[in-house]
Length: 464
Image (spheres, rainbow, N blue to C red):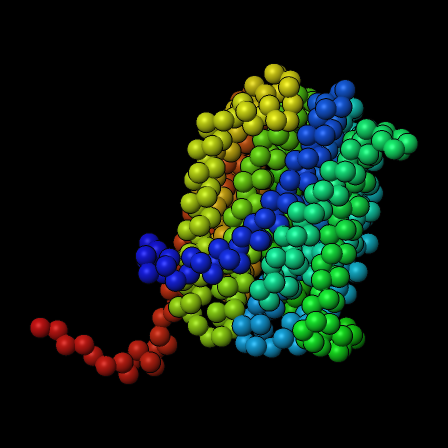
């Protein structure tokens, strides 16, 4: 149970750091929402939305693996910054760029294998025809996206979160304008339909990376942080440390995004209408998830900085406060999903058949909102401690061993359809939230406990 005194001291600095990161995450998700809405107004909206759903989920699974590998920066940079070692932060940034360059061609390979994979999974033919070129258009923005991830995680770990929010918010303007021009064919540009949305997204990701790289150089010139004096030769030991920390986080994101991508492909077998309803519900719960995800980034930074300055109680208080904020927000979102499902679905499409299907899926989403808040922020707090392995194991077990098989059984054997798969995912998230909250409490309790020698020499208290 979090103490009132802790909330009073920690709430303000946590919100100050978390708010721009939350805005950045909402900006990230709103791009996907705008894409879905704009292709949802094409003549064959169910097929277009289904193609965007399949393509974006698969590409996101691939890209987030790379982004997860770069999450080692949360630990390395925040702890170095907390210890006052700015040059060490710069070294981590330089080597994360090298890692991004190497990752780009490796992560591009699965996209070129996509036609065979989706054909083997018997995805709806109309959806498949659009999903392949759409996903390949997204591939053009892969390196800018990885570069954005690297710079973002570095500067936010050094308490510079506002530029991240600015980059994402303004990128939404670039994306919306690009969608309007490329999807519908404006200013003499041929109408590209759903594929145009993929190209617009890639352009906006190039813009995001450019903004953050430009800000880093501007900040260095103004404040003379000596970034340009950082050695540019690759530091293989540091890259190895980044991968060691980031690989479990990358696998965790792969397990999580991969299970949603596979769920999308399985629902695609049910037809265009269930797939469109799934995409609307998925966009909605992903949008609510962005808030605790931003808070989780703040938790990772504040916990890591406390560890860097050797303040275990401060790390505990920072993590507890962030988890409380995430849980409180997601409780409100659960209520909203139950009260306004029809209104939410109507934002995306006027098709009443799709809307009716979406309502049931949003009810399943409401069931796991609180636990999604727990698991997301607890994962960030544990990352600040340097523990990325535990969340990975939890996500694999709950999603792939329990949730997905159970959901597939409900969907195909009990004829629950898409709701069956969503019920399985809901069960998985509830389990992950409970376990990670318990692990966090156990880790910080052990961290804050005095060492055995200190406890043995502590003065005894009189009892009478």
